[in-house]
Image 1 (cartoon, rainbow, N blue to C red):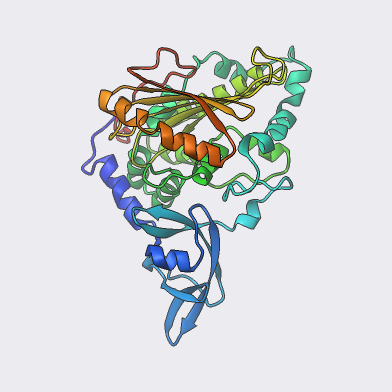
Image 2: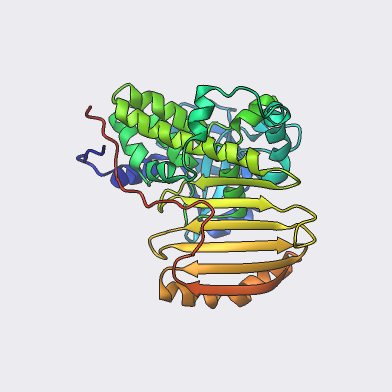
Length: 384
C-alpha cells in the first residue's frame, strides 16, 4: 500500500513547516506587547512609502513573502505561541467568524470548555436516534457499527508528514499546509492548543452543523474528507486508506452516543502532532451517583514522542482531589516523571486542586480503553 518517494514524508513535512509564514519575536518584545501563549491578536497592514508591514500594538513587523497579497488596512489575526526561547505569531482565521452563541470559539479555545459547550450539540444531533433506537439503520451506519473499536487506521494515516507528502505529490500543497497548521507540536503545547485540538478532533462537526454553528476549517474530519477526494482522484487505494481513518472517527462518534447515558459523557479523540505520533485522549464524566459518590472525571492520555517513548497517563478528578497514574515504557523516563511530583502538586494547588495520589510505573499500561496499533507505514501509494 505504501510507495517510497524520492523525498521522505517527514522531510516534506519539515519543508512545509518552514513554508508556513510566522512572525518571530524575542521574549522581551513579546512581554512589552503583553503577549501570552495561546492568545489571538489582530494586526493591521500599514504602509510607508512602497513598503508594507504589519502594525501590532504600535510596533512594525515585516510581512512574510507568502503574505504579499495584502492591502493597506487589511486586518490579519495571529495566534501567539512559544518556540524555544522566542515567541511566534502564526496566522489564523478571524476568530469572530467561528464564535457560537455559547461563547465557544473553535479557533481560539479561550472561552468555555470543550466538554461543557459541545455536549448539548451532540445531544441535539443524536436525539432522534436516542428517541427511536429501533429505527432502521442505513447500510452506512451498519458498516460503521461492524468495525472493531479503535483508532489504528487513523493513527497510521496521521503519522507526521505522511499525508502532507502525498498531497504535495498530488498537487495540493495548500491542503497540505492546512494539515500542518492543524497539527500540534510537542515543543509548543498549551492548555489552549490542546483544547483547540480536541474541539477540532472530528467528532463534533455534525453536531455543530445541526445546531447552526460553523465548523472550523481545521476540523480533522473536514480535512480528511478533502484529502480523500484529492487522493482518490489519483489512487483508489490511497483514498480508501483515508476513508478508513474517517470511519475510525465516526465509529468513536457512535460509541460516544452509546456510552453517554445515565449522566455519563464519554468521548475519544486523536490529536495529530507534527513531530511525534498522534496522541490518544479519552475523556469521561462519571455519573453523580456512581461508586465515587461525587461523580468526577477521568482523562486517559497516550503519547509517544521519540524522546520519551510510550507514556500513558490516567487522571481522575473528584471535586478538588486529583489522582494521577503514569506508565512509562522506559525506565529513565519513569524516573524523570517521578521527580516531577512536587512541581505538579504545586501547579495543582495554584489551580485550587489537591494532588491526592501520584504513582509512576515502569512498563506498558495493562489496560487501554482505546488501544492503538503502531503505524506500519510511511507514505501513501499514489502509483496505482
